[in-house]
Image (cartoon, rainbow, N blue to C red; front, side, top):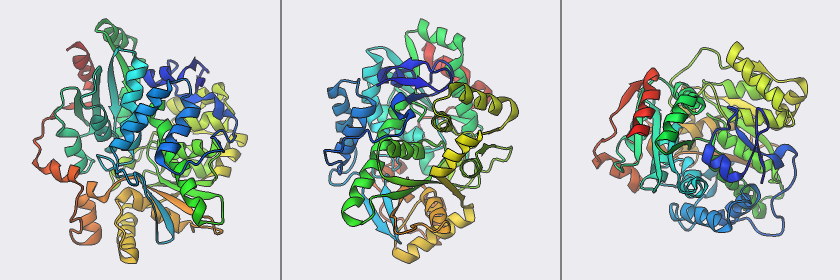
Length: 469
């Protein structure tokens, strides 16, 4: 499989994209095969299990990785999820809830981050890798769990020191394996992500890392090794729906922050999964919902800490991959748009690209108050407990009238409510979370060992200290 960078069209193999994370031109890597839509997944085999769906997706988009490496990555994923049904699809209140939260940290990030260490070790070819990851709450803990104890790798997670839930912080500050590190920052996710991207592009830091035998990479969804495995669960959802619906198509609603999860659904559509519409569900940091409705990306100055903290993001990296697609692989246009974002603070799609975007995507917003009201409503309606991010998605789905036209609507249930007990107590008026998963229950008895907190301007030095040790 050939990959291209979004800004200059630089070519790379699958392994190179996993190893590097960010492309040398500052852009992201995209599979060349997706520049034209087409049914590239095998149509002569059942994809109704997670193993089959993952093997099919990896076989198309990571076909130049050895078969045994791909198989080992899938094996590691399945070993970290419930054996009977790793990703259930359950119908509640007229919606099909794709439960992505049954991994070790209770968030959808566990799927890909169970597999990435296997892919990364192969891609690194024995080199020492230092992984830098910005997180709004969930990626950090999943990445630390995924890479804990993995030979030849070390990871630093940068997370907002305020704004995450208490459970999210404990998941990042209690791991004691010597190769995983969490650093709180006095800032938000956008600050952390900008710093990490700047560090990747800094030749001085790269030279220092090389002198110490270290290569920098990423575990965010800017890395293809994070993004590609997420495609499979949307393929799986479509296969699970087939026996129960006369409609071969379905709609997808995804609570969206950095745009990686819903982009994976769009990739699934381009690979042949019968997805009709992709609905971006935003909290009041609503840049994505506005973008998919207008074709104008304008983060603005307003940033709000909400009760759905993993979506408290204004500058979403993976949108750049979407820009490449809706502009038919025009790297010059992607570079222009990203330059406009940097210099003008916003950009607007050309008419043809805007038309293509609006044909596939829709968007909606839920406020913090509406989110908690939706959590209460679902519990009263059908006894189903959802976390605040999933509630943003179901709130938006209902407001926009999904399911529509007899077409099933799949909602990405992205986290367990047990990660957000404070919000659940407010929403439900009582503590109804009486059976936490063992991994979350154990957090209360673990000592906090990751205590470093830095200002935004100190992030570079935190990375250099780790390189030079």
